[in-house]
Amino acid sequence: FMDKVKAGLVEPRFQSGVRGLTWHARPGTGRWIARWRVGGKLKSKWVKPLTASPDDVGAARVEAVELLARAEQGLVAPRSCQRAEFQSGVKGVCWNKALGRWAVNWKSGSKWKIKWVKPRALTPRAIEAARVEAVEILERAAQGLAEPRANRAEYQSGVQ
Image (tube, rainbow, N blue to C red; front, side):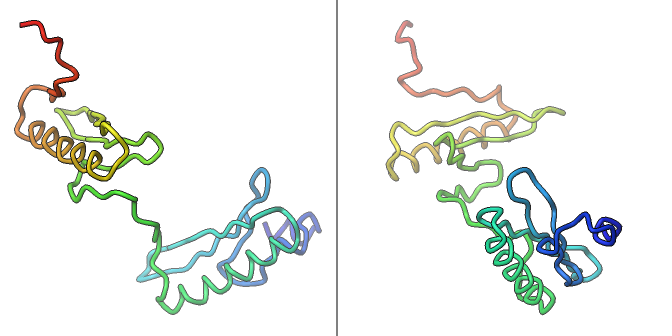
């Protein structure tokens, strides 16, 4: 990177002048990467400008410099992210917001398996009922029972 800067191949707006802060070009805009060490381990976060305009790139750089300063003081938790809208409280059961259903993940032998549990409606009550069903599926899988199957009435043929 420094060779490109010296050769004049990198625009000045993409040069941070701050140790631990670098620009990474991406299709469209790119992003600033702030890197620092905590207890000998390398931590990082990125700050993406809204657009590729010089003003937005500059504003993102200022934000990244502030982030780096807070991180070096120990005020930033690496990989902090928003909590999911719905939480199961059980390892192996998580909400997939894009699909609007619970994912149940477990290991059977050497293979990972997944089962999806879709709520009857996207209401808090129906989502909670589906979460309870997902946890039950995971518990059955942990007990080593046959591969968990849905036993809802809507999946039954009604033929005895």
